[in-house]
Image 1 (cartoon, rainbow, N blue to C red):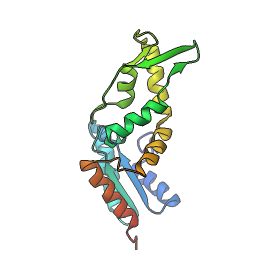
Image 2: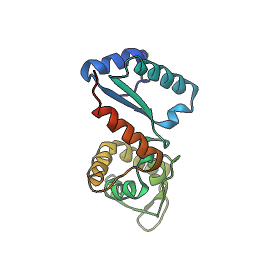
Image 3: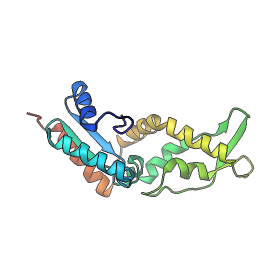
Image 4: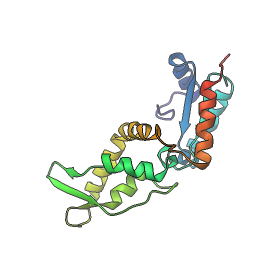
Length: 176
């Protein structure tokens, strides 16, 4: 749920969420802290959650987006599976140059910039936008695959692992 997508006050939106789930976790992407509008939204949302600490928790990702908090080996392994390998209209095969995703990168943009037409030609702006769009559409699938990978090994490290542990402790705590 995007707390800033309309004119409804974030406190009211949090109440709406709590009507459905009496213990809610809101994770904000760190890049939302950069703009004045987003920063004030996060401050208000955090204050609203602090008013009901047993029912709501607000965390901010360490990386630009929550996906940047996942170990690069895990995200790259999953992206190998889910990134587009061709376009249907017109039928065009896509290859990828090696790429690395850093803490402050938009991973959809990094993947799109690494995409090449079969044979090595650079994608057009429209084709790069299609790759970014496909990656964004597949975020749930990416998360599911990372979750499956996480059953065998931790996918978070450093500050991200500490925040994940904090979240798990909060979820297991008694809300009364």
